[in-house]
Picture 1 (tube, rainbow, N blue to C red):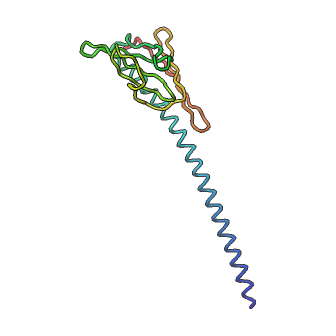
Picture 2: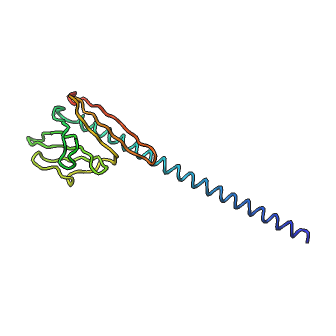
Picture 3: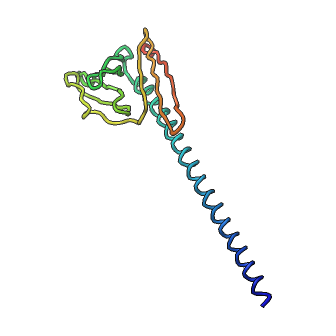
Length: 162
């Protein structure tokens, strides 16, 4: 009979240890999940900034004649956008790179066709895309937010340099 009290105490101690182990394991998993979500959002914001920066630089760099690269208000959002005039087999086309509803977009249309959002495809998601032209320089400011940080990039491109 003396052993029965000892068995109950050992049983309760083992149960308490198992409960403590379970709670600590659960809190570790919950903390790791939050850290992963935060890091994933940061990486996505950084990737969007890198993609948008590289895309804008490459589109301007691919222009056959940099004098045909201009910063003008686009008809969709009335905000400044990049418009690249290109000549294909004697026909003039415009490539528009612009920001609308949280997305950097591109549209490739004929000169006589009015720009419409239905012609555009999404490049990446951003929180802001501001573009200005100062003399021969094109200045692009980009930003993307993660859960608790805002990432920005500033690009300055010489629009006349080939």
